[in-house]
Length: 346
Image (cartoon, rainbow, N blue to C red; front, side, top):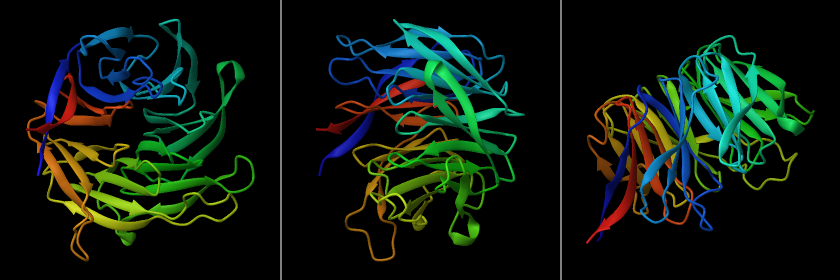
């Protein structure tokens, strides 16, 4: 049986404070386009990193140091890779456009009363979601000429909302919070009449502490969540491929993975190849895969590998790249980003 290892390709320095989040540009990494990702930090800046196709090494392509006045907490590329949204503790979300290699701030979204924690584009790129410490989730419609209009303000969480994430194929929005729940929001028939269609909490096998992040598998019928309760939970749904108007099918608990991290799990991301990575405050990265030989009633996923001391401090974000040969990037409180490759040990 082959053994896999997570090999460090490069350690990237440049941020002068903790690195909170990173996002790969989905339009890169294939057809000869070099891989590109954005990172954001407590130093109030966003950095754009690009891989050199000949050397395979990474360097800073741009530093976006306007217009945010406080920590930049989250960043996300539109599906086309043309726009980058950045969410900040200054209560704004900035929209950047790549104009001939220069990044211009083309719009600033205001409205949240407090720190914006996360931002996410839907699959078709016509909707953007933001969430905040003000306990609300906002849905914005993307209009021509880089105009953004708020079409719905979703109230329902009772605490800070840590992350928003659109489903990969359907216009269903997920949010996770300091109130220990995940909420599922859908547009119930009427245009812009967004409702909470499911709350996944402790009574239905949910988390018992802050839910920090969530991620979907490639076809969107499974979701993994991670928490301050030191567990990862897998959920499944039969919504996928349903005709619209078929009604919403709730997500149900599939299994819980515990005992793999001994401090808060801040980030989880599912690769297109079916491997999900977790990053935590124990400075470690874990990779998990389907367990085809799982015992009846046991977890359906198994540990593929563990990387202790992946960083010197908390790991805030782990993200798989697009492209033929996926790389994993991790961002840490130690101010660095690392790019990793999953390789077979001969």
